Image (cartoon, rainbow, N blue to C red; front, side):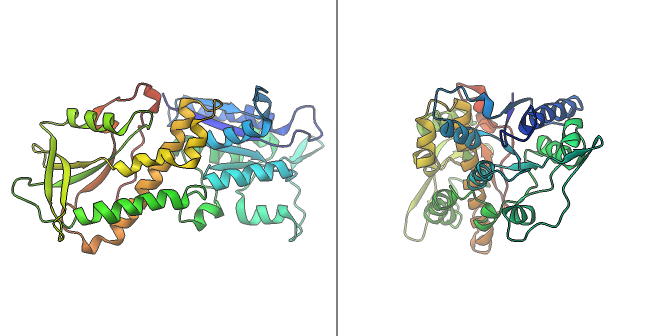
Length: 354
């Protein structure tokens, strides 16, 4: 079962008996339930949290940061451009968390409207409206499930992504600021030291390989050795073999399945994702569930694959061996459910090279 976690933030005081973010929370559940009934959602269940869900056992800021760091989507009430909310949105941007935004209108004679006065170009509101934020909805539209807010939420429930722009990740080439250099460095090291040289070796008669599958672990809750053992067991007579040598005589030992002519590589370097400071910080906090921890590594695995794909496409003219049939797969696509917790298995395919 795939669960979508949404965290809703907003100012506590908005001149009404109930904070605006609670209206938004109700609207999200309504939109999701109607969308699920149509059979169009890629998520099976929905969990929506707001600041009032804080159990109070941990520092409040830590709890807020933990929710942003582990949610699939942040929805922010930016009506008054509350400094706390702006800070929370910025944190989500730096982590690469998709965001949606709501701005409440004022009520006059039973009608809601957005303040349409020309914004002060020096104000933070002007900057957010014109540079970072997608169009917002009024409170009546959100509650009734109408307007752009509902449309964008439905798109997210359908595709698992947000169309809203994030200048931070755009600047870092689609990689969240917090992971930019670490994940990119791992991928480039893997390509430079192993993958690209391997795709230039001369195929031997002993191993007439025809395709290459780069296998990514669904979870880091189990070690590298277990993942490799599961992979070999699932193959039809597969095992370790020597694909060939490079110009310096280096041997490329790979997992090979003779019946299909498929070479499999489970990048050992990818498992060092669990050694980064961000993951260690998550792993050592009790406020994170196992599913929350897994969300971190899933995102970073996808960024690793994205960077490897870019390297393959940039070096396409210099590649020969197997380069015409390279694909990325989750380990579970080959071996089935190999994690102790089935929720950690990924069902969304990885990005493929052109």
